[in-house]
Amino acid sequence: MKLIFFGTPDFAIPSLELLHKSHHEILAVITSTDKKSGRGLKIALSPIKLLAKKYNYPIYQPTNFKNNDFIRELTNLNPDLFIVVAFKKLPTNIISIPLKGSINLHASLLPKYRGAAPIYHALINNEKHTGVTTFFLNNNIDSGKILLQKIYKLNDTISAGLVHDDLALLGANLLIDTLSNIESETISPYSQNNSLSTFAPKITSHDCL
Image 1 (cartoon, rainbow, N blue to C red):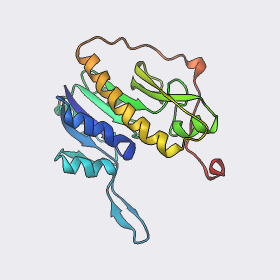
Image 2: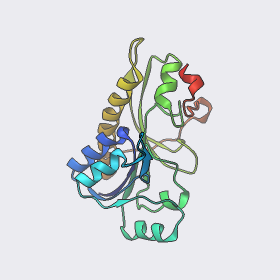
Image 3: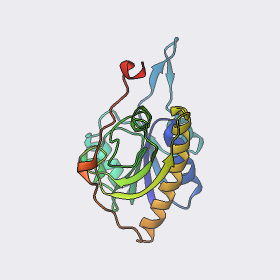
């Protein structure tokens, strides 16, 4: 299938790496704009941009996702699917472009821990397990129809950093399985139970204390 990949941080790297090794065609990579960081305020490229440059993929870094020229360019690429991993919320006119829809990889067992920091909130709340979910994007945050899920066990000594890295790998493999099932038309997306949903907003300095 023809894919366009949306991602920015380290969490998205295993997904792009496995997609690169797969038989699917990556038409382009969309990532955040370059930012100044560090003591010298040097321009820093996102981890996904660095990987996309290594693989020589066309890279887009839009500042406005409602720009008609950008939307037209994505549409003209004629993608089958958008793959979104650790990226900002996309408007409806973007996620509706691909023929088969837009898929997101999320680091929780949805509908639990919708939002930006699912790993941290799972640990803060002493969960016994968490996991990864692939689902179709819609207009609301992390609430689209679920495709596949994989459970990951937690314990009292595990760190957020280890969970992050493990879920990034687990999620990348789940993403490949999801694409295989979509391609073979052997998957049945199902709606989330919104009554069981919980929210995982960005972590604050107070949370860290």
